[in-house]
Length: 431
Image (cartoon, rainbow, N blue to C red; front, top):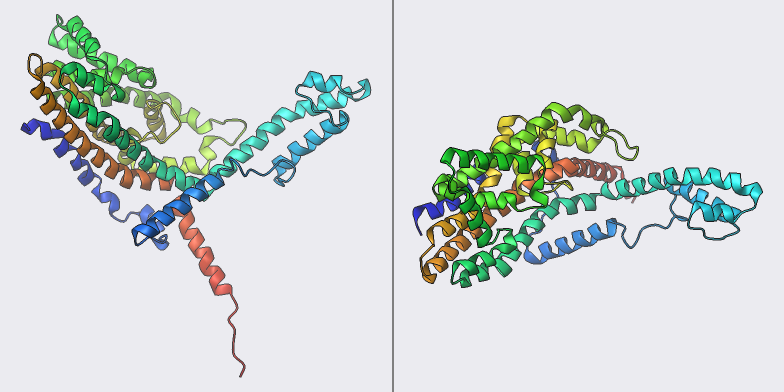
């Protein structure tokens, strides 16, 4: 393998060194040293622990074991149940599906009372389901499950690559087979890439670079990553536009970071105050939510790692490129954002640039060259997946735990257990 083919294998592990100080005690990490959970010492114990935590997670979601409305004693449930019972009493037990049916099922003397109850039902229903939603999310097993989800997602991607993509790559005998094999990764087909190359072939280099940057910026601003493989196509074309694998990969990562910075500065300039006061379904503004306060603290103290986490693992249920608006609104410094985002881009930048480099260099070569290139890409991608798994397993999991408040609950639970143990009466022998 040529030296530059090892570029990704050498560059990405440097990210581990960059975040190595994550393991050094910090004011936030020292708080959770007061109480460490019991760690499984063997494979059997580890599997048992995983099984128990998985069962607790699904049980805590209340999918099949949710309390019925008539047995739930929480105020929101009691209020909604009372309104439903009043409607049933007024309609003599008739189940109605709309306000019109309810009014038609009662005498004229009771229609005014039915109308009053129907006005209260929507707000009571929203309050009840909001209570259910926040109650489920506040449970520790659910928080712990979301924390593990980032790691499981990366393992699932690795499994798909190893099971579906890698064998087809290794079996590719020509360029058409190769690009057909990588389509599950979102890479456009060879004909589409060649069409783009032919359309920009007559432009000067500076014009090509300018168009490249402009398309990247528009793709980020309008969050098109969720719908179109524009970003993957741009990264695949990078070595052709910038003249080489390493140059193209680094240039595409830098351009992506520059484009994401546009979202970042828009979020900082226009969304910071609005984000603080945002409220959904009548809940408290985000600025008063405990989890949002922890998110702001993480943004101020560990902005680079938070940016790296969001670039590597889409842990928030939001469009991917909206994360950069959010980080700008949270007050992360631009230098930390740029460093974390750029480091997170390197894996996909080198992978997609490898496809583009193969498209550029394999024209006219025989099948053995394609197979050799495919083997190199499989090797480099495997190293990249392993590196990303380490990063997500360390930085991502720790940050998610802190954002969800798991690290604050463990010391509190340990302190309560210690107080309960000290409060237990001690039997004294009288003989």
